[in-house]
Amino acid sequence: MSFANRAVPIVLAAVLIDTIGFGIVIPILPQLITDLGHVDLDQATRISGYLLGVYALTQFFAGPVLGNLGDCFGRRPVLIASMLAFAADYALMAFAPTLAWLFVGRAVAGVAGAIYGPASAVLADVTPPEGRAKVFGYIGAAFGIGFIIGPAIGGLLSDLGPRAPFIAAAALALINATAMIFLMPESLAPALRRPFDWRSANVIGAFRPLLKSGDAAPLLIAWFIWSLASNVYPATWSFWSAARFGWDARAIGWSLAFVGLVMASVQMLLTGPIIARLGERRAAVLGLASGTGAFFTYVVITQGWQAYAVFLVSGLSALVFPAMNGLLSRLADASHQGALQGGIGSMNSIAAVIAPLLLTQALANGVERGFAGAAFLVAGALAGVALLIVVTKVLGRVPPKGAAIKGTATG
Image (cartoon, rainbow, N blue to C red):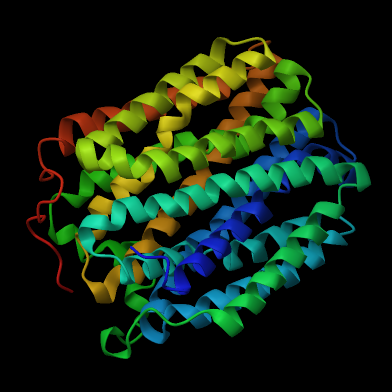
């Protein structure tokens, strides 16, 4: 894929802004929730799970709708509207007077943040099927860079108060929306568009064309379980690191920035070569094995420097989503790429509803009993199940790299 297509860097910037907006809040969540709710850290941990759950729940419903709107009207107007909504929402949350307003703001951000479908569909529009796994790695890199910039900004701006990061996120979203309005071309030709259909604007409808092929089901199940496990980072990292290492907002921000740097480096520099050499199936196995090992290691470490060492080893887990997405995107035709990517985003969102509730409660209960690694123990078990599914069900069923997938959906 050539970056001469102006849509691509702008779309990646949209994903980056989305991730910055999410990540910028993480370091200041403990302080913001304790201040607004007048609660202690244990109670704030549980509240944060509900807060993240609301964000993800609205994304769950919005993802397939935005993806289908992109298939109907084109990707450009959907992405512009999402960025404008982001800007307004973060401005609102900057002045939220109570926890209730914070929940409202997170709900609106969930709708606006369901841009995974249209953004990924743009990349699928301009990339041949055999190159999509590598290109989806660029989205992963944008997420990684967002987790460098977002938590770092959140940690630094925390010195100005817990509201300052929201103002910064609003400004970034408005700048990106302006760039889209004046610079972004449309990637979906009118001839490839299809009428909007509410029956397909949900996670089941989005995946219906794929499920005509038996190859999709184990991939989707493994994706969902891995999504549950990988949510341990946004759901619990701030609270776990504060409990385990005594880190403050600045230290938490820098640690997440380092994670983002490692992930972005893998996505930008290693995803393409590794997938080209191993194929999408084996690359997914490698990523899952790396992530599973890392989660179990977090259970037992006791020093902050050890966490940084684990980051380096776990970086290969960034291969999982682009490898699986490359396989799934070859099961959908051009007119359903938006629906597919919206469905994937929706599936990620429902995982992000369940995971914070599960993992934050595991962490809080574990801390009360002197076992701060409980959340990562649960995450490791989930990741192990996803790895087992891919090894036993996907490796033997999905064709080797570069081969056409039997049963490709046509509508």
